Figure 1 (cartoon, rainbow, N blue to C red):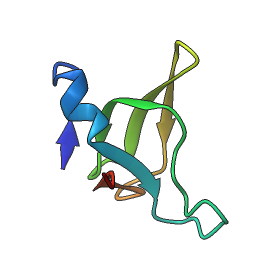
Figure 2 (figure 1 turned 90 degrees about the horizontal axis):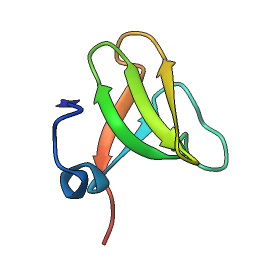
Figure 3 (figure 1 turned 30 degrees about the horizontal axis):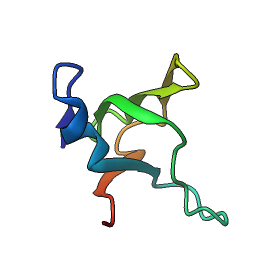
Figure 4 (figure 1 turned 120 degrees about the horizontal axis):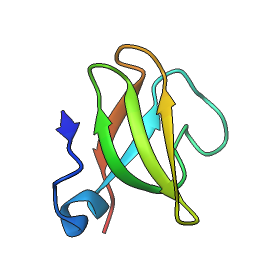
Length: 69
């Protein structure tokens, strides 16, 4: 799955990115709002406190899952 920069904010807020290599207390959930993400490459851009950060966890290093309502 891939979330692109041009997708609407409401669509992006339905998803959260988690690390596939992390088993800590928060389950590997990445902080911030997703700007863009790609499960295949493991790259994700998140916005934290108004600043965009690019993170890379290697191929298939993240999963995008729906937020519970």
